[in-house]
Length: 170
Image (cartoon, rainbow, N blue to C red):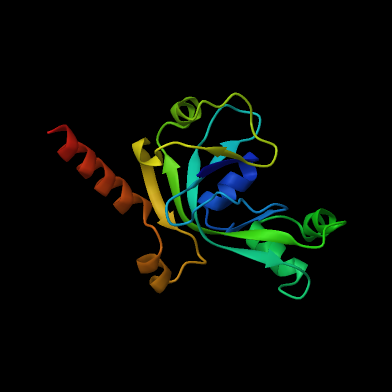
């Protein structure tokens, strides 16, 4: 099932500028299928969903996996933020961003997902993300050529879905 998260404007800009390649969260989404689902990103304090992204993989982060500086750099946040966020938690989860798609109409996406408020952590939404019009898509800098062939490609998936829908109508 798809997920909606909330991020501030500067972190959304960092994703679009290919500076942010991971999302750090304290919870792992149990009902999320990386082969079929996407993560919609709501802009904090607005009624807009400007982007969605696929998840390459989930990783458990503790001090033996990576240091705070590496995580902070990939997440585009200060090192102090990572250290403070990890305080009191045994470990946190790293969501590695795969493909990123910028939507043509962020307000329409908000309404299509029937959002009322921005989620605090994340919420599940059952919605055919293929219906949404995309301005552009690109792979995050953590993606390799092998990943591009192996992982779900949103634009190809959207075109196949629309083609299948068109055949069903005819």
